[in-house]
Image 1: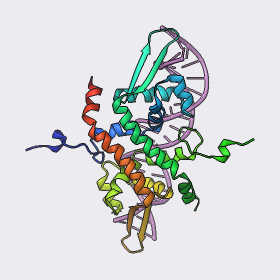
Image 2: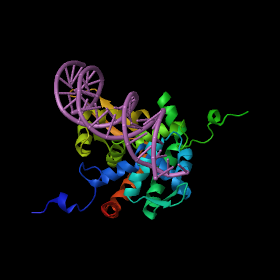
Image 3: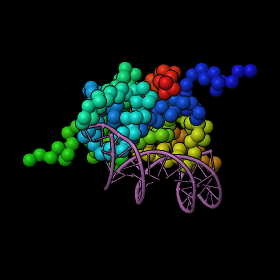
Image 4: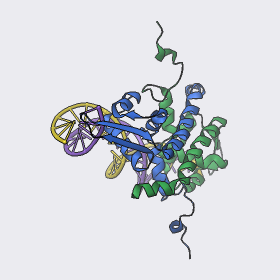
Length: 121
Length: 121
DNA sequence: CGGAATCCAAGATGATACTG
DNA sequence: CAGTATCATCTTGGATTCCG
């Protein structure tokens, strides 16, 4: 007797236990979304990213970068010099995901007028 | 002297004060993503949705539905009968957004194998 | 059935100070 | 520069109870 959860044929975010949901949460986290978008135009250093993403704290930026690196979306490159020099890039997979995230954000930006009007009504 | 923040020419999620970021947070919230995906195949009732989205509590489902309705992504229709009968649908704008969200989720589901392998390494 | 209200636990986030 | 450690806070989320 086969157990579908063991075979795990097809990931499904609607299923409570599916690991895809955890990854999705990383990507759609408050700062994860913005980091992916900010990295779309190429390599960035830590403080550069921090300036680019309005309102993010050092702590949350570092944490978000670490999580997204663990998932394989971000490539971290540290040059052993002083003062430290660390660069962040999207991996190929990261670029794919970033495109989707960016499309979503753009969609919201494009319709923001309508959305805000709806809320007022 | 023009104030760009007042003119608000172009919404930008990377800007701390931009209202688009608030909306983006609603859409990418833990349950918001899943509600939008679950509603893609048409009308659903409350308890139906609750069963479909693994792990969501009544409280969070109700709250998420309300927020997404306020943003104009979801249409709520209550029939004045007893017992109560309430239906939820995506609005046209909601469908647009749901497509982007679904594309993102599908992208993660498709690459889940690679992602999990990366994490183990 | 479809919620709203309350209470409480857990996790996310931030400010600050410190370090290699 | 690029973080980490610590502590305080603020938000999220869940369980339960009650209601039209």
